[in-house]
View 1: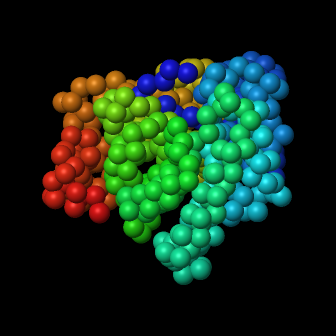
View 2: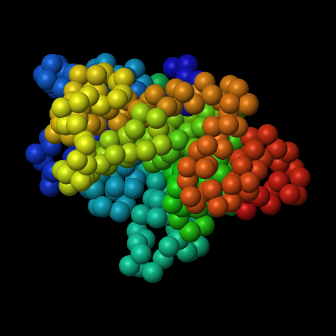
View 3: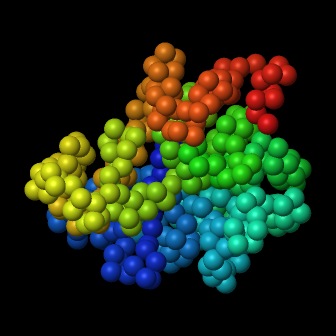
Length: 371
């Protein structure tokens, strides 16, 4: 598929057993789409991210995603490593991916997966990182050697919260096997882990020079910078996030102007005496045009559909904004101003981002800004 710029891939999810009353995010599936479209005014997204232990290991493209144009499959490495998701081998996962996906990721062992605050770490120790790298890269070589579906692209997963760790992992993997594309778990622009640095992660991706998928983040600032970088490199970048589902779980409605979210929980609504439950949400998405605040609050499917719509829309906006350097700089400053953590060092962050996109990476000053 000829894709350009950045693209948000909504995650096809099934809810945990404890939330069984929510059933599935039914709008992803054709049979459910037909059944519920009249009631919830659902609409279908043809670009999806699926995962064996989240979407469901029994899901198939022919049965569950017949209208999908482009499916990317995560390997479920995080779920498998941290949640003991199931007794499935690396090759079991590969065969599932080959039956459902256009692009799939190798089975990785995330360096964060076994580590929690209670274990005393805020960042993985070096020996643990090396152990995860060794196992993950062994999996990657095994999957590439065992791939049967020649039409499906298999991409390598590279772990690391900063440039140096990513480079170490990538160099080790590429001594064994090269891949047509890669995926990395991107650090947050809002609340980074200790030693995480999303700008240096993007520097690594730009230097590698292939198509990339960025796992688990979609803050507007990150998407804006990715859109600009994609325009420069002529590569496409996809990304996903569970935040649309999290918004559903906690009653969060994403403002169509990107920067704010509103709680639709009953407690919050009761605190707003002027909140017109019978009024329409000021948003032009197909769901909001047909439903009142009250219906949005009570209809979990409608809330999820709206949130996914907003994320797709601001992705499209940023692909356009990236084409104009002046407008890009204006929006970049506004997004940095909107985040207290970044606003405290506004000039430094703007400089680092501009160095990433426009700077001469051979100068000592520029290089030091990434470490």
